[in-house]
Length: 112
Figure (cartoon, rainbow, N blue to C red):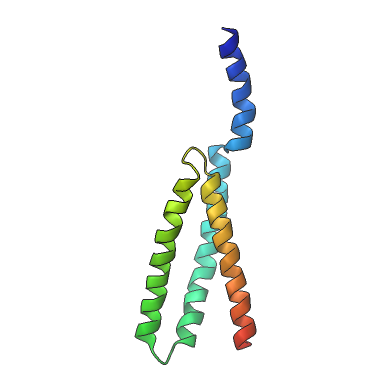
């Protein structure tokens, strides 16, 4: 009985620090997906305008690159566990940071 009570008392802090509640997870996903919906078409448009000499190859490289990065990120999320949305959030944050740095580097290179 005492062990069960102690276990229940530690469940609340453990849940607060290792996982998140469902509404918070969905709110963060809503914000992230909304940002993707705003910026992703712009990025595709910029890439297509830069590769206008070979539009088919540009489109193929964009599609293949997206598929490759998605295929590489999926197992990485699974390596860190499936009991919490934290690994997914970490991989998404790292990916978005790398994408932002790549956009900044591209802007500096091309000067647009």
